[in-house]
Image (cartoon, rainbow, N blue to C red; front, side, top):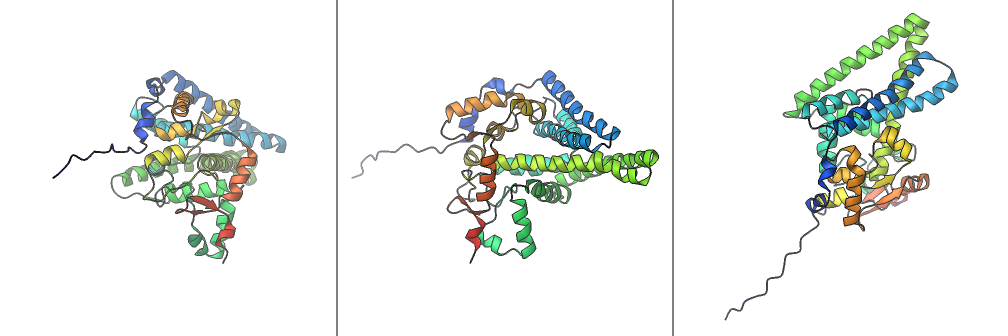
Length: 353
């Protein structure tokens, strides 16, 4: 004789949609006035040191202006990143144009960035074999490297190597060198041709201007101090920024079977509190990274409000800390290799026979 069996309620896993549901509707409101003002501010903070660099060769002025120029490139890039996500303005076309223009000083191909960053990195954050941004090696993978590759890995994962890693792995391999198959291929190629042509024109113009004003020495020096040095400083700044967003002893990566969107966007990202002046002038709340990963549609000026709503609802999940050089050095010292099955970082010593 059959009896009625008690049906147990199905346990629901954490869902990213549940997190999005706690974000107030106001956090999705975009402001053309706020966007226009911030874009103007970013343009001035980039152009002012660039003009200063063009007008002087005094070493102590260059030492001051170069970091400001690198930060200026980073400020434009962060806004271009927001526009590339479609979060800056309501118009999809306007966002696309703004993203292309703002990413030009950092020599980023917007269509390739959209695929690599917007689709892959955000779609599969910290998932083994999918997210390529600061993807760690296992012990066996490190052991299989040649001598030069090991030296490169030790440099790129050191406290001074974030720029080298970003330029090689993200900027070069996943953007300029990479051509996507299918429908995205043509868009990426067009953006490469457009940006590459603009870069040639600007570089040639600076070479000619330098030659006319100071001979062949200035023909090489002017593009170096105006374009190359600020770009290299930007790469170091943005590489370090991405590193602190996603690498720390208590930020884990996930195997393919264990990964979920909730784990990737909530448990493997962080909120870092930086000095307010630096944030307002150049970084535009990008260090408030958890809500940005929860929903990329949130514009930069609404991220603090969204972060508070998420932290209030998930106080034991959201990571938040004040920017600390000590913590950064601790991370770069501890986070070298990774055990995906155990879910924790390993030092290089783990790879010794």
